[in-house]
Length: 298
Length: 155
Image 1: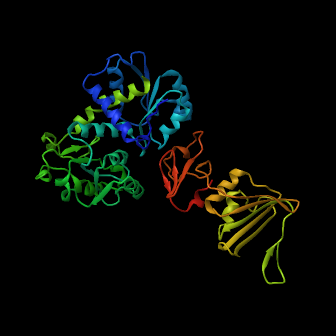
Image 2: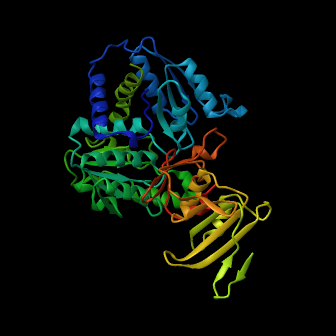
Image 3: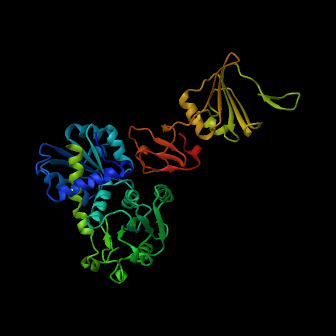
């Protein structure tokens, strides 16, 4: 049985295969009723807009159906049911389980109790492999990933998308430039792991000093809840706001990506430039998740 | 439990039945006991020697536990903090089994994950699971890495 839990589980060839499959789904190279007799359980125990909607859209596009739990309050978790029990039961209802959960490692646990495939749709500050695949997919739409310069900007300490993406990019000989406000730097254990994979990781204090050398700038949201008061949040948040001024002299094919939702990190004026690719990135969630759902249920 | 021998060395008495753990990393004897669940309120008769001279280790600790033979999973736990320890099983004053300790590749239910957000720190029916790497212990659920102070995380 094929689970999709963590980017750690993927070799370069697995990533390339899934990206190729996503491209087929993106360009219409699939049967529109390929999952006609299949049912997916979307178990979202944490808020989500894009991830949940794009998994549902992906099922619908493939002719499949889904059932869902959209909050902890509406489930038996409030009665004290364990995730393990929920997963055992859902395994008897659905052909695959898509899980978002606030605890790290929840998807790994689910895969141990499930008798159907599990796709991790984000587990706390842990992994979010379908997001990473759609990030890679969006980059690959414009340029080969091998050997490019990618800047990761924002909360690199708690941001799960940044960690997963960095680990995936290590398969592609990418030079990684990290730019994080004080206290939100990438954990040393992850930087060490990246370097063990042979990745060149360069730390920068300010996005302005590196933006002209980048092929991709990946911006993440600073989580307001990490700060003791609004003033210190705005102080940090304003330190790396992407504005039109900052984009003077950047490479013509620079891509600015963001997993969304954004909270002021990117000035809306940037949306109208050719560098802004984050809405296209969000759109790519559908073909990538079609590929994943099809792969685990085919 | 101890006495001076005429040559000036410090000895602790042999035991009739039980386990002798020799070559414990100096200073770790009390942690070894904690790992074994032996506290002041348990009934085992114990002898403990710490910072004893050792040709091999320089200094070492020794623990003797009467009327208790260590099981393999208990030995695994000791290996984390005392990798050179030697376990001697004693029956009727004779060493009937002598074994080293070996750190297993995967530890289940031995170490608690320090990450409060880890799914193993909930009421889910799973044991903590760590793979043993050169750089530390890696949680197979949440990817947390314990690099030092392992004794404090042993369950």
